[in-house]
Length: 616
Image (tube, rainbow, N blue to C red; front, side, top):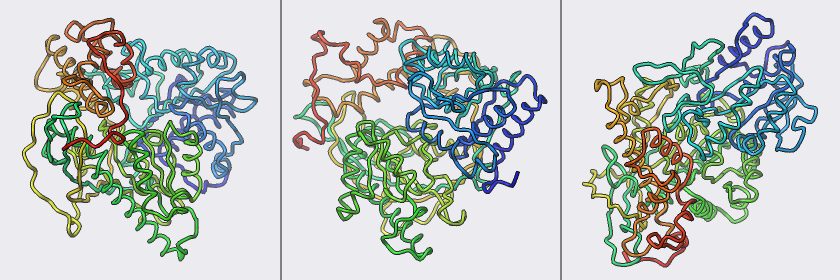
């Protein structure tokens, strides 16, 4: 076989050697393969490598590939159909993106489906697994909580319950993930664990398992991912306290940045993402993308109107669908009308053509700008993304890592590796700074500060005011200064987060064993914080009676969802279940549970942007 035109990366070679040994009968006893691959490192080729060798050897008959979102099904099909890899690997296999119709493979080598589809029709997929020896591929397996840790009724727990019989029935399992941790700190379905320092960590030496890792450091050394430039934009924001439409006190202006999170960090961020600051950050990202595209056109001798691949694209990640619509309109207003229609698309779950927009953004020279909320954050294979506008309020590390990875893929159409880099613009809030600090600490790397652009202000942070229990009504915000820093990624597979151990009072710190009551208090505090955070984010969308508190109502909803048990009466296990539920669900979607209770009368109003301007 001739050498591949795109050489295999080290983790891909490792998997190829492993399944080759399985095919030859030299690696007996291995039935589970875990590939922990840094986002952007190239996971999508691993199922093709495994299936081509195992099916050719007669060890399995079919491959079933399960992904967390519908948009990833088509990318999985493309991975098997890629002509270069077909030639390099010497395979002729095809799989189809299947729904829950009978005979999902339709005579092909297998099919690709989603967690949601399996949960909706588990018997269909289990029947397919029992009829054929199957290589089961589970993409982004960290989305699945272990059944013992899952709580009844949550979407993630339903996925785990539906997929577990498929795990048991499969002949060989290939589990893929960019992280070995869940945002809620819980165990991942099917993975073996051992106790280290009193905390559970994945057991990479468990019998029957083979683990293949690929860190950022390895990916960077092999030039498989790009280094990241961060553009941190500071600003200040003002808002009204509570949900009342009159008689409110104006809060602020308060700075986004600070030495650490404070009572005003999230309200300021919430406001900034929906007012003038968002426009300022979008403009920075938009014009940075224009500069990248213009420079690449100049180097290639292209005219301003030629539509070719490899010029660089902009991905805008919004906090919600209303903001996404607003950002979409802003960007289109900065361009000639005809060009705006061609170059700027939006992909949210509310858009009928969202999947077509995603496909066009990935596979064609135009559009050059995509605005989305969450559809494109994980698994989007669009190497032409050169700039990301991170206008999202989410600050969980796995989520942010996945978002940043959209820009760290090497674009084969963009020229030399040395001429490419990822550029991520984000609010300069301390929560994002903590995310970056964790990565830098774990990777033993440091950012290299760049000179502040001329004219960018850098006033000292002001004292921050107390946050009230009421929600906020965003008024205004503006940008103050932009600073750049380079982060060259290093090792990324973290087995346990030190800060999570400290928060939960787990052993591994100097504190020693923790009394159960202290663990319960810490869990109650985390539940309260998550309820309050959802209330702050949602309160701008509701018109409340004077003095009402959405957090109070959300607490009542949570109580009803958990057998009318208050947090004070919950066991540690029940509190953990509540945390996991809050991680995956919105309390706003369950306010109907309060219908008929006069204590919680309320009325939905339109988003604040469409309501008459309030006095400030």
